Amino acid sequence: MKFEPPLQQARLIKRYKRFLVDVDDGEKNFTIHCPNTGAMTGCAEPGSIIWFSDSNNPKRKYRHTLELVQSLNGHMIGVNTHRANALMEEAFAKNKISGMENHIVKREVKAGDSRLDFMLTTADNKTQHFVEVKSVTLGPLELSSPEKGKGFFPDAVSTRAVKHLHELEQLVSQGHQASLIFCVQHSGINEVHPARHIYAEYAPTLQHAVDSGVNIRAFSCLLSPERIEIYEEIPVVI
Image (cartoon, rainbow, N blue to C red; front, side):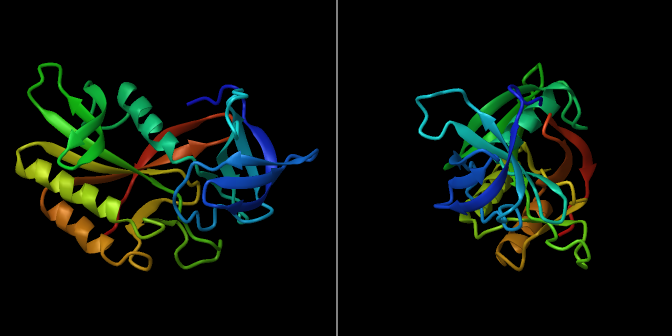
């Protein structure tokens, strides 16, 4: 995924009201949109270098969007959670995800009381594979941390994330294939763990989903101010 037009650089002043970030581009201070509902722990520290996109839409109240943050310990982090689905869709189209090659991809599919991100079907429509994607940005806050290389999900209490796991389990019980994919937009993460220290309920729910036949996978990304793309599969440790 190439950024068009190119991203612009600034320095983060503060994040507030969850969806707003004040930045300084060296000439002026202004407010941009922050497309992330999570806690963004370690991803929104004052003084961090950030990159933002420009919609070039003067009708938008905040025409600029926060895309990348360089953490204070030097890692690149993609904080626009909406990019995760686009990255996975691009990877599906390029047959970069093993076991999901050459499928027809449909977005935003209703499942039970939820909407899941994708449904993949074979050309003959004999199999349906439902996929939910979660963006992972919570990594170690210190380079010397004993948790170096570990990423965690979720970064805040999320009953919605638990509900999606239950929906995936139900689909498996109906004879479908179902997967949860962690899209890791953090250069310092090489394995994903459930965040027991943040949301204790998530880890046993994730394990139950695995035991029920839900596939749990994670993929790292290559991140730069020029482009983001899915790189390689990394372990999920429950």
